Image (cartoon, rainbow, N blue to C red):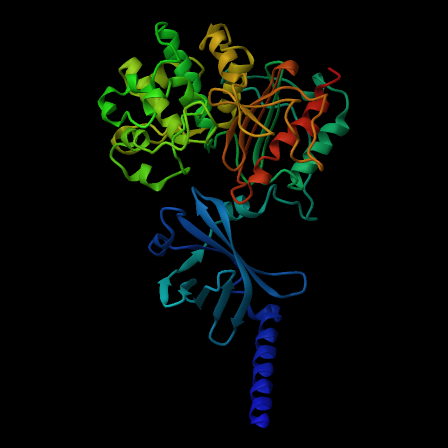
Length: 498
């Protein structure tokens, strides 16, 4: 028996050594190295969460074959598929990738048509997953913040943003500071990804665009999904609608705007007011985002039918359903679709001509997270708030609504307060990125539209400052929120001596 065991382990050692040799021979894996993307037919395995998967196969500094996977939506990575073991058989051209969940992706390379034919093996299941070579643009967006030069270095030069006919004035950042070291230190930290995978960074001072930087192959013409920044835009639209209807009181019951759902008024729901909806203190039980809301034919009914988890006004509970209801209230007041209202009273007056706003079923606008804008147009929204609802020489939203909606009404946590769909961080809030958590007497009030994965519009009124970021930090909320300390510790000091 002992001899049999010795023979077994000796054979296993030979096999392991043999595979290891394959993995360390750079000439034997040339055809399989590179970036691959799943075919449209086999990508359905991951819908609706992801649209495709990219697979990067290459050698590291020790000449060991490695692989990384990226789940993609709208051609950007929303999560990484991490593999803990990679084996490649050069004779049959088969790669086997074991992931953290003990699933195995096994693919065979067809060198004639350059396709990886494979499948994901998970317990008793086997799901086909094939790959073809990805184009260079996707490689840049996934891997390169800026394409390095021939020496492998990424250079940065601070340039005045280009003046184009979009309503934004530009100015050199050196008009407002003489300390170039602060600017270059900021960009060094961004390039080193200290603040996550930032796709765009715009800084506006005294109503002038002074910095405009794009990364990972993005540019100013690319629309970005602004995620929950959509909520703050919806708040602006509601403010415009309430300006049209002076008789409306935000303390009135929310069911007054949804009379067709009166039968749902029970268990304390009849006490929910418009203000409770604005401040996310409605008390409704909620799991953000419930897939049922995207499947139902009547998302208003779905939201209003949720059971109560507490008394209205008692506690902040993050609830994107509240934002969807705000869209329904705008529609009720204005007797028109919310998108048509936004086009007439917000987008067109501000010269915002390119946008996408997705809908739920039955053409109900996704007022919680469905808007896509260009970063420059996000900056315009920031300037609108900075200037108390005024864009250029026109009052778009009343000064009173801007003041009331952006001031803190409820405490979300020790780190943030919440207004009417706007976040608020001040010197009275703890700085979570410090150890131990502490407050700072030097801190300015920071009004923020905050979107998942690092989409931010940040306004510091005391410094006439607006900062916009878009990012792809889907896997870490901590990294996504790092844009706040970036502004407080890196950007504000640039302008404090102005």
